[in-house]
Amino acid sequence: MKLTEELKKVLYDEGADLVGIGDMSGVENCDFRTGISVAVSLPEKLIIDLQEAPTKEYYDLYHSLNKKLNTIIAAGEEFLQSKGFEAYAQTTDRVEIDNNRITPLPHKTVATRAGLGWIGKNGLLVTLQYGSAIRISSLLTNALLECSKSVDRSNCGQCTICVDQCPAQALKGNLWKAGMQREQIVDVEKCYKKQVEIMVERTGIEADLCGKCFAVCRYTRRYLHNISQVLR
Image (cartoon, rainbow, N blue to C red; front, side, top):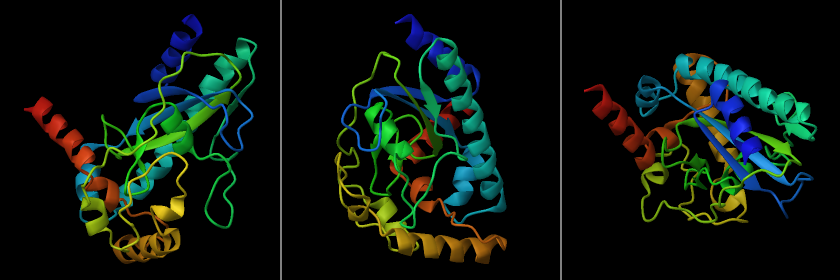
C-alpha cells in the first residue's frame, strides 16, 4: 500500500531503526484501528558498560533518545493528518503514568501487535535485530495501513540470564504470552527501588535506570556480536 510505504519512509528518514504496524482491534484503552511502533537502538559501548552497571552516559542518552522518538512519531502524526486521517503520537508529554507505573496504552503493547518482538523475561520488548537494546514509542491512527502479524508468545525459551543477573531479584522467570499481567513477569516496586539505589551509588543521580537485564540478554549480545563482525 502506497500510504504505508510513505509513512514508513517518513519515520525512517527521521531516524527510526525499526518500524512496525499492527491491528489494534480489541486492545484495551485504544480507540484507534492501527498502531505504529517505532524503535531506536542503543550504541555498542553503552550496552557493554551496562552489563556492569548504569552510567551517566546512559542517563543522558535515555533522555536524548526519548526526544528523538518524540520527533519521529510527531512527524508521523503530521504526515497522517496531512493526508486527512486522525493520528495521535504518544509522546512523553502526552503519556500519563499512574501510581502503579502503568500507562493506559503501553508502547510495548503496540510493539507486540505490530510484530516488532515479544515481552522478555526482563519485562521489556525483545527484538530479533537488537535484543532489548532499544527505546520505543508509538503512534495511533484510524488510517487503514498494511499490518504485520502480531507476536503473541515469548521466544525466550529456557534462557534465564536476565533473571539470574537482575540486581533486584525482581524478575520471576515466566514466559510471556499476550494478555499476561506485568506482575507475572516482574516485581515493579523491587525493580524501581533497586534501580534508584544503583544509579545514586554509581552516578549520584536519583533516577530509576539500570539496564542490566537488557544488556545481558542473549538477543542483545547477538546484536553486539553482529556489530563486531561487521567492524572486523
